[in-house]
Image 1 (cartoon, chains in turn cyan, yellow):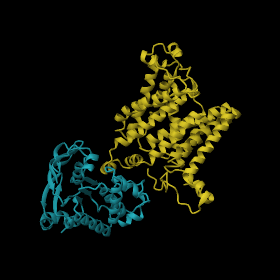
Image 2 (cartoon, rainbow over the protein chains, first blue to last red):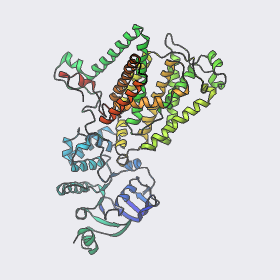
Image 3 (cartoon, rainbow over the protein chains, first blue to last red):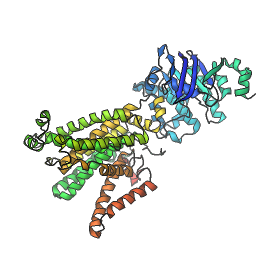
Image 4 (tube, rainbow over the protein chains, first blue to last red):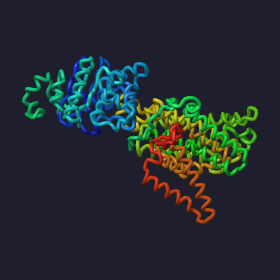
Length: 234
Length: 369
């Protein structure tokens, strides 16, 4: 479904990605793990069109989207839930969700999707008229995921959904992520919480200083001495 | 920057509030009735003022209306989108000159602007439909339409910028407009005063346009476009991530805003009837910005309030100045008031909140937000 080949991305003169290649198949939950500054978020931003690579190609459903505008990419079915939640704090929860559907203009469908998102995150139903900034961290993360789902994506890019959340809330968020996978969504997940990521994913890529250094199934990686030492703290 | 409780609890403007009391009371309290009532009161007030023949007060209220259009427009461009424009008075200048040239009667035109290109020299919009100066309306629309076109071109370049950069760049636009007006003698008489403008503008004209601007800006704020404007102001990256293109909402705000600013220019031209390029510069720019900031960036009712407060204060202080003979005091006092407001209410009197008329009329006169 998604295929990335030899991606090189720079911030000015600083190299963030140094020739990354990987792929995500339909229905898979693929996790991208690695430490701070390894290039995980950069990879997601490049896929969703927020960054332009200097070299390399992003293929989505066999079409080259490397230089497609971000709004077109959302319309094609890729939704990016950015790191740090980044909900619109001054707008209400309802408005945040509506903005998620901005690439689709069918009114009736939107109501159905809104119901579906609210059934995933019942707490948001109570907060619909509240401004996004008054929500707790966990609720904001749910809102951010909900907002990303409102565009009815085929491929969901999740950037650090566990960031800064209490363990119980993280557990809840990951339950939802598994549920989404069961409903047939393809998910590319970026995580620093390696335990959770390994538990949820079908396949894992390890990224270090802008390069993929390891890949495999969660089971293989759990017993890899390098992963154990660097990421699982054993 | 984001105040959390800064949006009205009930933003839907056409919404009829469920009301426990039935019958006449419900009808009177419905938002539509309240809005119609407010319009009626305004109309009665304007009629009385019109009939009273007090030229001074009429002039003040005309001025108020023109500034209201300017402030509302600037709020649309800057308050909603967060892209601060210091160049709007340039649009006003183009609207003023455009409409003034178009409405000049042919005879005067040949006399007054002898070097106009032939195609423009033969156009004149001084015709009436019965007692109605249709030409004035068309000239205003035409001038504002052209200015909107200019804004589109300028916006395509400048709306890519944000923050201080766009403020400086729009300031550059203002300077360019001024230099062009000074040097395009054939059209504008250069630095000489452009007079002989037909005095079409009256109370009704100004307030018709002011209410229309108010309506359009209000509707935009609570439309999908308005949400897009607010969203990209709050977080441009997140807005892009959900699939909002940044440029269309910014451009829409900029172009619509330029249109109404140009209308205000046309109204001003046909009110004051003689002006020169020097009028449309920093002084006017900052007066409009003061009103906008005092009212609250992003608040439509704040723009109305800010305009009324500053115009009323300026007038009161001017009179005080005449009595006390302390000339210059009024401007100093206004500046101090501005500083005090910025210190204690950095988001303006209303912040981003709105005064919802319907709420003012509810049982027991609950305070507005």
